[in-house]
Length: 119
Image 1 (cartoon, helix red, strand yellow):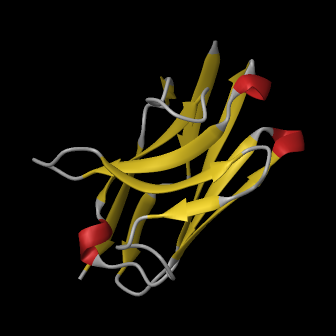
Image 2: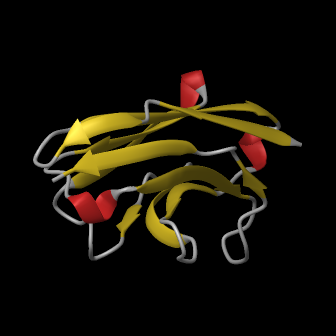
């Protein structure tokens, strides 16, 4: 069992920056990937970024590549999403997820944190 708690959301002006953190507890050593997803009102949950916990390989959605950076601190069981050059279309609830396998669905989710970018 893995528990995930997101923090760092808030209101920011377009062009600004925000840093989200995901604190994991439980059997995190079995997780293969941890990632960030977001869901805007009336839309489906979309992939944002992910990181392999063992190799450190990162993956980004085209919409955020060059602006967002995902990183991890294995000792602290924490994954961070640094968001720069924020746009109004980045407004969404951001969720942290953990996936146990190299391939497959994400197995655990946090409750989400709201990010609002004003124009």
